[in-house]
Length: 306
Image (cartoon, rainbow, N blue to C red; front, top):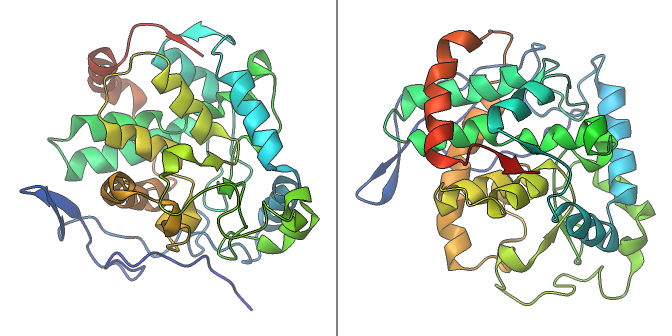
């Protein structure tokens, strides 16, 4: 039986229908030109974690280790460690170059270096949203936290850098991919951490929720600690773009406040491009670099603490 991670209802499909979200008078309009492709770079359905392929076994093993080890205490410890931003000082483009050495083992849809995915996403958004330059840049930098994989940052294992993220400190929702492996997680049977709300309160806001540790949370901390001038929606997208249980399956909405619900609209727009723009089509880096450097200079300091 094939199990495909559920898509959040966005009036989009994988049959080539055109989908595009616009903001008109402060509201999101679902119409336009973005074409959802029929398959990923391997010719399979997107986020199909049981499709037989060379990457299937490796992806499942990744999530087994991830789900066993991502505990509430572990994530809080990592956030404290890396939140000090003492690992390096470098520019955004220097980080992009550094990151290009790695391929994401948790991704069943792509096996290209990271700069390919970043530019594919950014250029697709730029085409459909020419006036939202902050969103173009957000697409370019959203995965830069994966620099945690680099030896100079501690050479963290992939299971605590990439992959889907989820709240810790409360029950694991069944919509999380490969949910079965959480049974071996110490938090799974904890009398408090295994309950619906756990250590949280209803509608407390996602800013108060501990998320599984990875590149999303790290890049969010880097942005917060470096006087980045991007709008709040960009911070929300970076922090939660791998939180598929929320923005694809609708889980954990009871932890959200009103501000989160507004930000979620932008995350859903972004997600289509993050997921469906993955392909074998290369972007000419030198051709587009001047444009993205102008955005980096506009929204980021010349050097950042990492």
